[in-house]
Length: 139
Image: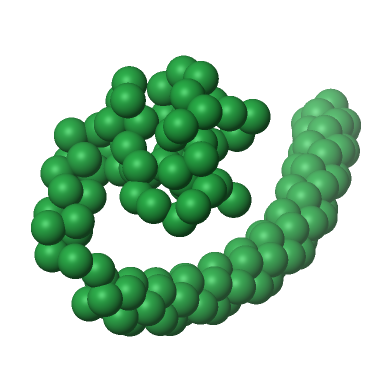
């Protein structure tokens, strides 16, 4: 009987130690969970702020697009229909219908322009590049 009591006490101590180990693991996991929960809440809060900012930016950009479309329609109404058709054809064909002149060169094709072409542009006339046929402008 004494032997059995010693064996049972030994098992009880072993089970108590195992229980303490499991309880320690539970505490560790609970602490980790708490930290992860705080991290998740912080990330959600950050996401909400960024999401709200992006929605606001999208609304601002939509309003700007609407405004610019209105301005474009006003300007288009003042342009000669033949010139507008020519512009639309160039845009469809080349992707960009107009090219800036920088340092005497067409920025569309990087070809040097003649003095006559530069002079006509300076006079405010509509001139197209002799190489890429884009409409030229000076800034």
